[in-house]
Image (cartoon, rainbow, N blue to C red; front, side):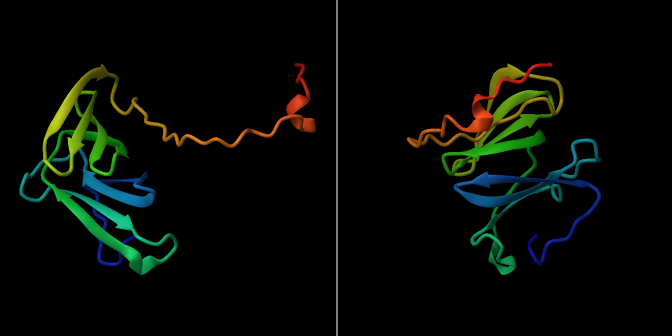
Length: 134
């Protein structure tokens, strides 16, 4: 974790990959008493994996209705589940949020990262061809 970062009970933390970098997001616990002047979201990036001193703070964002961060997309969009259960995007460049009509119960939405690849999956291995019978 970043050297000059402190952990308090009112904050939640998420690790994700953004632009192929390990990213730490700290955000206020939605169940704590909210103070818009102090409850900020910080986004930290690790420039070089495994190098402790390579952490830097990329963004500080004012209070968002965030239940849980889900991922990042196209270098500037933060994807999260809102406190009302809806999927939302936050544009890091413009500061605008957008809510989608895809809802779920709290902490139920997930994002899976996918990177297209032309490599084939090896087939014909001994374990791959074996049928399991129960």
